[in-house]
Image (tube, rainbow, N blue to C red):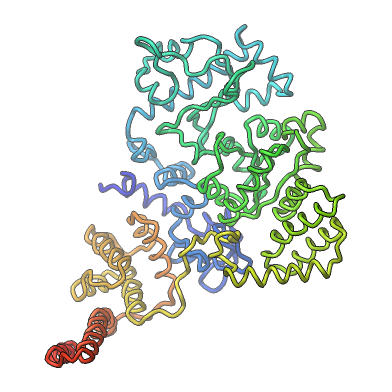
Length: 606
């Protein structure tokens, strides 16, 4: 039995694809409507108003004409949930009660027993910290502190909050008694080596412990908040093979159901804010791991929702962090709003002082657009009672408003600024238009504007396949289309063309296809996609299979396309030789020009 990606047996992959119809899988996340033999909907991977996301039930694939995303049901789950291939296969297999046998859903990174032991150690340590908080004298001061902060017993249990006592070897002894290797535990970030002498000590002491989970609910790290005074206030586990800060969002495993349902996420700064908000009824909240938000975080959120509300602290540092994260989230195709918390307060403070209902109504539901937030932020830097302050603010405000593409949006904000600075609206509008003209001369607005915010998932240089392709390019796509649907067509092309495709990706797809058929497999686009190990190739295959059916193949039709493919490199050589001949003639080297002319005739005959 051969193995697929991540050493997964092929029969498990095939069983998963058999049990997960592409339409049923996608319909859980995207509203699809039938259009002929296709199903269409709004793409979940980039922002769009006209549906370009297409599902083909008979081929069991999806493809978006807007952003180029494509693949089979497993690929869709990977993209929408931010999972690796093995994680997606395991999740889908468990849903359908497909036995995993010896594989057990572990990808290549989890083949090593050391990581399994580490996951087990983190789970046991989390339970130990929680027990120490709730059931021992050591944990009483921490428990009193949590209750003073409004944490109920229910929420302490749900978030498995614990306490690391002010001792050097509680966890060291706890793990040693359970036969965990201290060298492995130190590598995994649970304990630390002694500064002097041999042996190990607890990494966390006298701290309230917040377990950090991966998106599947496995404890992979801790954040410890100091109980008294001291620095650092929060201490995180170090990065390990299990824990990567830039790829982890706190509380995602709890919040993802609510995020999907609401198509909205609330992004907080700290663990306490997430937990307080959860108890206040805001159950779609997550936080970054004491680090800056990353592109990967944004992509994870985009796979679950359309809108992010940033709810950071009301101080200048919190507001500056919010401003910094706008482009990152908007470039991922997310609509961004900002919840404005009163100066000097954080969300946790606000909830404790004013209650859950007011927090939801006044903070979350009253979140403002990023443009509105920028204007509020700028306004704080100026004294509007003074003429100089009003002029400076209006100039800075125009720099925010002028790049907006919507005339309606520009007018709304210009009228607000006009009232604030007591300047005639028409005057401000004229200045705004002049500034727009100046900006348009300097740069193009749109997806390639580095300072703008991209409304989709496209990165610079990524564009959908153009409608008009060169003849050889169309010929290669047609050939591959037939080859993926018919074994005899693939054998004919392999014999008469082999890997001599001009487009590198097409040559790679053909090579994979020849290998796929050599294993005795039958034509099946969805299963063939699972044999590929390249995201770009999967998208290419999906795009090729979305072409209108080119009719029934015959050897003479394949020959015509093969000629087109073979002709292109000869045509390139011809063009080059003709240019060389012109250069030789201009330089008076007529002997060389005559030699090149004979080479051109030979190429033309070919």
